Length: 163
Image 1 (cartoon, helix red, strand yellow):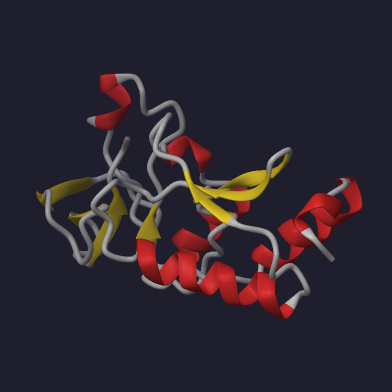
Image 2 (cartoon, rainbow, N blue to C red):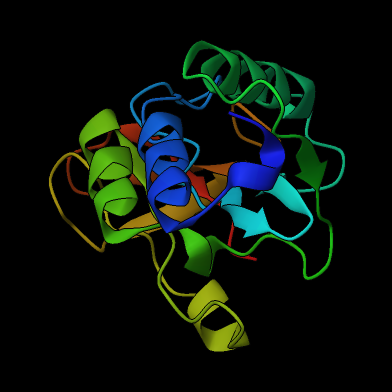
């Protein structure tokens, strides 16, 4: 299949393929569910990706994984284009992705993080569900996460930074 052949059926097959590509830093969540894959453009054809932030060290690994998945699925002629505007937002994380983050032990940010009040909202502990939590450090296990602690179960956890 050539890039010029991208129609709705091909677009759906490409997206289904990319739903199987795990994020390299959080393998429980796909790059589609994290909102990194913006979609498939048909003219000119391309898979559009946006890193969680412009300096994300996983960007090259994500692009390589997407490229491999596309090649293996017969879409070797479809290019990958990195799009930085608008910047990635935590609002792009799907509901399934939010559930997967929580199951993996990472607190997803609230929706609507454009509002400063939501950015300051307490994180829900992914282990016990308590909102009696506090941020320990703006710097977590990766640059896109912050370190939090539950004051009820006393467990530490990461929370996606709101943006």
